[in-house]
Amino acid sequence: MPKFSTLMDVAFIVEHDCEDTEDISCDLVIAALEKRLAGLKTKGSFDFDREAFGINDTYAIMDKPSTPKTYKVILCREASQSVSVDVTAESPEQANELALKMAGKYGENLTGWEVDDCNDNEVYLPDADSTEEVK
Image (cartoon, rainbow, N blue to C red; front, side, top):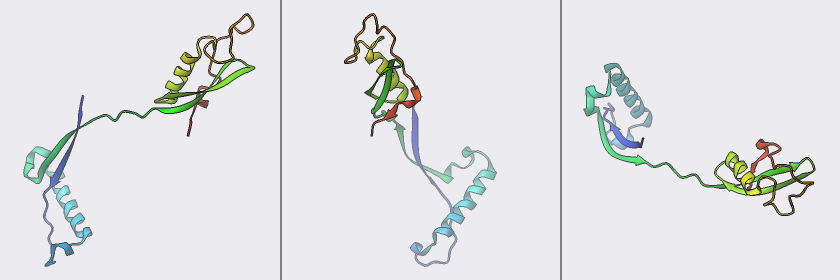
């Protein structure tokens, strides 16, 4: 469901003794606005006094596409064989998943990791939480 952003004005009165309206203090304006809001809250719903609010512009809020980042992922095939690979992803979890796919089940897609009778262990993440963003 789409989300929207609406810019609204609130009508309120500021009683003051300044000849030049630019001399009205911020504290006085805020106090008057707080008084107006308190009055609006005690009277009930938004529908009771639409003149208190002015609707200006409404815009649809677009979801910002996430920017992919580079992550360093450590992969192992056995206790004595590990390598770190850089993966571009939107999250560490996605980086882990992509690194495992990139490596292949037995690491056959990684340079120097041949699959033979001695090296038939599956690639795994020794610690999924160790994946870090490359700065």
